[in-house]
Length: 312
DNA sequence: AAGACGAAAGTGGTTGA
DNA sequence: TCAACAACTTTCGTCTT
Image (cartoon, rainbow, N blue to C red; front, side, top):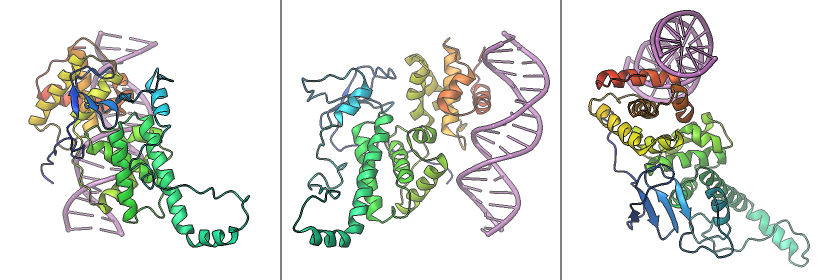
């Protein structure tokens, strides 16, 4: 594994080209909004955040005032998608009810025979709802949620789920899908919305990569920049500068073997100082999840090797 | 007093015999 | 399977602004 090649971004994105708008993303400021008419939403290609949902079919009886509210309300009606456990074609039976007479006995027997099928069905429904819940909390666009759901289907068809925690698997799948779509989340960010610890998520992650034979090229530091910059309240100039620094560092092979998040953090730290919008190492550390020590080490390397004078 | 610095020991994952 | 290894973290004392 000498030179890990970065494959084309968004390898799994929809076949139909989405309309790209030149409007600015209110979250990260990049001019890369994608309007997806099929899914009725607008999201940012750079930071992967959903800006608006239900853009074509906004009901007159409600308006969302923030995206939190919006994602909750947008979930109410079930669309016909992969995210419905049987593609939305079945009628759910109320298993808990005992009020009916007549065919109760037969029904019970049938229930027993299909008990296995029902419980795995139930766990599948739960898995999809978990994917949706976490994706919602991370404000991920619908196409990523669907890709995650499809991946879960695939894992299930290969019988990789039984005996494993659904939480671990779904968390790992979300992590994988974000990576595949070029809008990577850190393990820590996934863990924050998950109900299990990092250890279990990364175990499930490695397991899935192996069993499903998924190849994931290492994340580029650049993919983290827009989101981190926006979280630090930094301008577009700094985002561009940080990306420029990373590209140069990458040419000089300073990024080899280093963690992409640390590189991104250091580049942002440098770029912010150069443009007069100083952030402390702790500020950057809090947002990126890498320690100040690592930021220091990376930033020393970068500034020396690239001949960048950083005056505090 | 806050921020930056760097040494030293510890952690968890990868690799190669 | 295990030990060596590299990247990163934790901790902490010191220097700088």
